[in-house]
Length: 216
Image 1 (cartoon, rainbow, N blue to C red):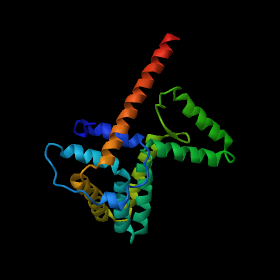
Image 2: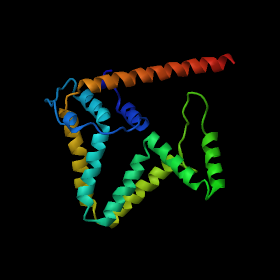
Image 3: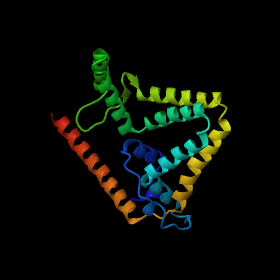
Image 4: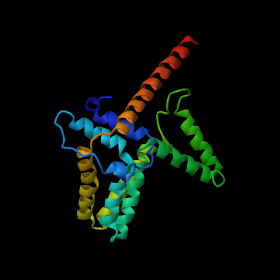
């Protein structure tokens, strides 16, 4: 897979749909560095952003915790924003929605039934994914927007705008520096090839399903 040819929008879609596994071990994370190469620089960054996504997320959250730990209100804002960003990932959003529906099943069965009917009416069967994701009965996009707006409002009320700037500088700058200098290892290349095969296989299955549907 040529990561340099991968669009940023495609990388964002892949990060949204993939499950966020355990972080890579430190022995692997902190080795094999090299100067960026102009021809393959962007491909290296995209590959590392995908492969070390969980490590970078931990660095981002830790940077915010360090900067906001002396400001409880700003720390609460961090939690709200983190939840909102986490919901941008499909597996996390689906897992949280299932957890909420399971918790509300005995308390509000009608609401749960309405939520399941709403989600089912907006989806299709077979190999295709649902067009929209819901958090109970609200669209996922609306919940994310509300959480992010609430988090930013709390940051403003806590007078932590400068702290937020430092947290973003550390939380984004450190992963970007690592992604720029970390050489893609063999495991990353194998994982990339595996993901590419799965993507092609899913597309092949979808074509077979469409052909089967048209025949009937």
